[in-house]
Length: 338
Image (tube, rainbow, N blue to C red; front, top):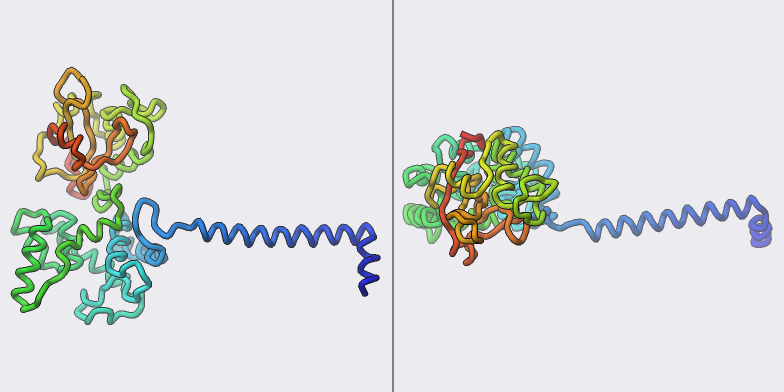
C-alpha cells in the first residue's frame, strides 16, 4: 500500500492531488486561527459603554421590545438598566422585572419574558414622566422605586436629584416599616454603564439627536482656530455653527455672538443641547472666548486645545473660566427644537 502511494505521488496527477490536499489543510487551519483571533478581539463591552457581553447578547431582543413602544432611541439606556439589574451576569430575570408585576424577586426565570416585562415597565415610567413633565432621570429612578416617585418629583420641582431620591427612600421606608427602600443612587449606578461620553443618550431624539450625531462624526478632530467645516476641522464656535445648522438652527460665527443670541439660563435649568460659555481662555478681545454644548452628566462636547472632545465641567480650569449658560432651542419636549 505504501509502495502504491509512493508511486502515485511520483506521477503528475499525484503531485497535483497532494498540492490540493495541502492547500485545503492550510486553509482549514487559517480559518480556525482567524476564528480564534476574532474571538479574542471581540469586545466584552459595548463600544463607548460598560455593558458586558452577557447583557449584549440580549441587545436584539431589547431593541425589538423597545420598537414596539417606539422607544428605540433609548436602547443604550435600557442596556445600562439591564446591566445594573443583572450585575452583568447571566441572571435569568435579567431586568429584575418580577417585582414590577407584583411577584417576589427573581420569580421570572425566562430572560426573554423578563425583557418583555422590563421594557413594558420602562415604557410606563417614561410615559408617566412625560405626562407629569418631569425629567428622564426621574423616570430612570422610577424603574427602581416605582411610579410613586414621579408624583414626588413633580411636586418638588420636576427634576430628579440624589437629595430627592434619598428623601423619598426615607419616607417610603418609614411608611412601610422597612430598614431601607430602593437604591437612592440608582440613576448614577445606571449611568456608569451608559458611558461617560453618552450621558445624554437618554434624551437623544429629534433635533438634538441630529446635532449630537453630527458632532460625533468629528470626535478626535484637531482644534483649528477659525475652522468651521469638516474639511478644515473646527474651532469651538465653528463646530456649534456647523452642527446646529444640520437641525435648521442658524447661529452666528463667534462664541461671543452665539452668547449674544442665546437665551440666558441658570445652572438649574441646564439640559442637553444648551450652551456653556467661558471667558479668558485666550485673548479674544471680548468677554466670551469659548463655547461648549452640554450633553448631560456634568459634561460638555466642544473643540478645545485637545481637539474635538468630551470635557468634564467640574475640571478646575473650566470652572475658573465659566461665564454662563445659554439656550437657542428647547429640546426637552420630544427632542424637537422649540
